[in-house]
Length: 442
Image (tube, rainbow, N blue to C red; front, side, top):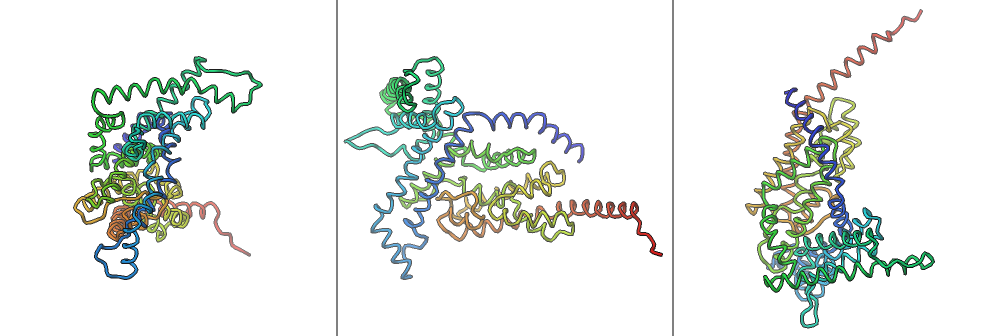
């Protein structure tokens, strides 16, 4: 067992860690992640509006309060949908600005100007004008991949032109704001003269504008992202990286966010149309079933630590229990420790993977409601699970079952680790007593 563990650790340190560090620092991945983080507040508030628009009551309810709420939401559906349409409904607007602004810092460009350039590039191909109105079809989740690609293209084009001095440069005496406005004139013209004709050409050849063509090409990948295999692979990579001390969740969520947002948008459209929700693996599924208390689902472990006979583990449990409620578990990861601790290697990897299988089939069989809202990752598990599924009760039960499952799997390994610590405490106490024997008072 020890030899196997040493082999795993060596593989992680020599091969996986350097690769993960490179991926985690890759400028495009970090910029995409920053873009989604910048858009997150707008999307959370927009998702929260769904609770008011689609209250969690059956359509035939006779309870006065519920009936009044349902009737009100039905009568004023169009007005109530406006905040949602101008937040979640145009998420790609915020994302494209965020990605452009973040990537600009890698090239020492002005973030605000570059973010606006990225937005223009996206709108140029994703917001066709028809009968005097701009189509919003691709401003939601359907346009996420286009927003990513156009933001990167626009920023890199701007950086290339500036690097080769293909810009209008004014004398130093001119105010910075004015000088910056003239500097970006040529990049704006370049983006228009390259992206717009490309969009027209694709439309003429395929009958699809660029966002539609991109979604058609990526549809197999999007479908594959919503599968049990994808869930298990994402969890395994996240846990393995974290065990090595690398923030695996940032890398995995940075990759998965575009797929999650696309699928979330489709779930919300289906909900508004009164249709069956198509997707399971969304961020709410990840946060509230697989990462309860943080990576490794360590909140149940924190409760177990509180009853430990080892002073060290009880102390860590007291330190970790409150942050654990809000999915912050660094005190436990580094204090117990779990990271690079051979005793906890198996449960740390397997607990979220086994819970993933349990949660997947529970949702897939229709026993648990699917995710339709975006929630803050710090929301406590059972509450966040219900909120993400439009306040259904079944996700609360599933989240609690996952917590019980995690506790049962962690318990035997904790007992083994506890015995090691108790033996060490006893040995230290015996050695201290031998070094400092109590003298006899005369």
